[in-house]
Image (cartoon, rainbow, N blue to C red; front, side):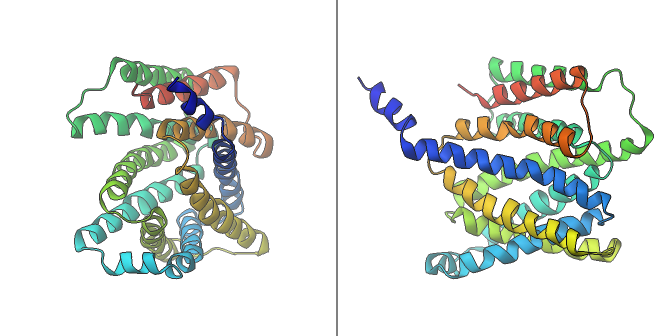
Length: 304
């Protein structure tokens, strides 16, 4: 009898709505990879491109925070330790992770990079177990091995074009930074008591500003025409500010594991979109490798 309310809750309209909203977010995030590649192919400097996206998104989120008295009060009363964590989160999750993603996309196919970034989940699980002094379960170790097997299937026989070597090195930096950002983000969300939109806005503002200044200093702005500004605007307003806000809203209804399952749908979505719009076809071997990595990373997150 006690299981009936859970079943009803799972099939309730708010739950179905949250699932559909989360799927919309994953689709928007997946299209980001196509739009980023298009911008890079139009000679947008990678680091500046990333900085423009996240700084513009930050400017969109600032009014939503400032019009809320509770958010303003939370910011005024933040201790220095929390500011330190938010600065660290901005540097790791935006400056390093997103900067590395944009740079590596200039050298790698979208499917290759998203496959590598999925290993952030594996790194997070292993580091979390080390920090919390909890050994990964047999199920998690099975997921790790399955993910590694998928990567082996995808990349072997090893024949990396010379132009992609640098991209792979930057992507690996991005994987480690993404894992570190996930751990930092979890710590801030669990212990700061701040609303998610405040955490996102401040950390994104810090990381995006540093990206923009660094990109403008090192690479300049290139030649920004109307099409490139449209790509930047869509990425910033729709795929970042709107999508992040909607994702945080869905997390009020979905469980963490449900969110992980839905987030994992990005791996095949990006591969399909890259094939359709970027002319990046995949062999059957690579499709199998992506499937194995997707299932493996999902298993790693299935702690029970």
